[in-house]
Image (cartoon, rainbow, N blue to C red; front, side, top):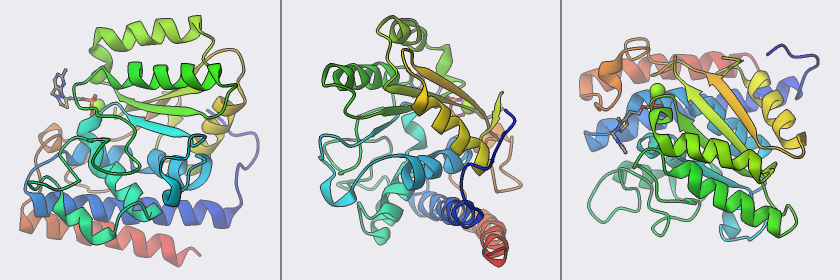
Length: 262
Ligand SMILES: Cc1ncc(C[n+]2csc(CCOP(=O)(O)OP(=O)(O)O)c2C)c(N)n1
Ligand SMILES: [Mg+2]
């Protein structure tokens, strides 16, 4: 997707890139501590989730149950470390709680539990189901007079589920312009790591009337950590201490480089 004009001021793009870089550090630290979880699909989604939570979504961490808030449903629920990192960054939970990922009694389970933690909109993890949940929310928004917008992220692997296709066929039938679906295709039309392109696609989606929007985001699985990028072995394996050290050195160097650009 070519951008006709800048979508946000350079300082705003800088702010978003810094947040995404910090969230990648959080993801690796969380996974290294828990010893299990899914780095690949968490790292690939970091820029998109950042653009949603810190630029385009209307939400309030102090009022997680605000009826008019925009909703984000992470249908590829196994990538929830990226969502926990965003919620911590936004102030829904204390940053140190991230280190309780996947522990017994933690609010941060290996897949999102919406009754456990404010900011989580749906229980997801059984691939294919989140888009149907998001569609129900988008329909409710329409019935209430377009009160809020619903964003749903699905995975390319997840898209092999029939339920995704059923939802994709029924959403246009109900003219669900309150729904934006983002495919994290960590393999395109937009570069899912390019902040201006993500923002522009989200703006176009929000302005589209009479039909839902589907954004096909081209991403790299494991984005940001050289030895994890495009390596399927890093789909669901947490880094050990030595690997986490190497990953964090790279992510901290990227974060510092973005900060230098201020
Ligand atoms: C119904 C169902 N089948 C299988 C799984 C196991 N599983 C978890 S993640 C995954 C692959 C998902 O790939 P993709 O949607 O592309 O996610 P990403 O690459 O972003 O991690 C599978 C098969 C599951 N969670 N749910
Ligand atoms: Mg994938």
